Image (cartoon, rainbow, N blue to C red; front, side, top):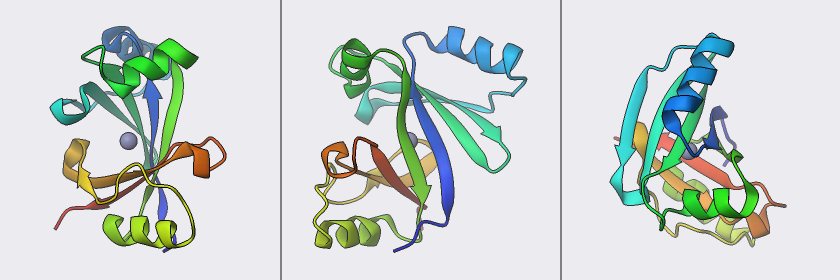
Length: 135
Ligand code: ZN
């Protein structure tokens, strides 16, 4: 398993509207998609920078992992997502190499991608997401 490219960078924010204004007004990017992922209790907003996306994540509930992340560490970079051929296989491959997984198998993320996370304890603090097009 070798990642093909960085698919997106996930950024935890406490106020999505305010964050969108920053990325549009200051950075000059256009938000092209806003989507709620009920499963993960987040509302997401997407921007494109070249072929890499920025994914803003606002918690929609106190129980959201994004809410506890912001509480513990403040707003900021939350995860890096790598595009892979097959998320399930990439997870299995990492696990065989001794990496702890958050997701044992892939699940549906925003933008209809198959996603899965590695545990940051096994990745020197970088919350790592794999994602692939669903087929
Ligand atoms: Zn993500």
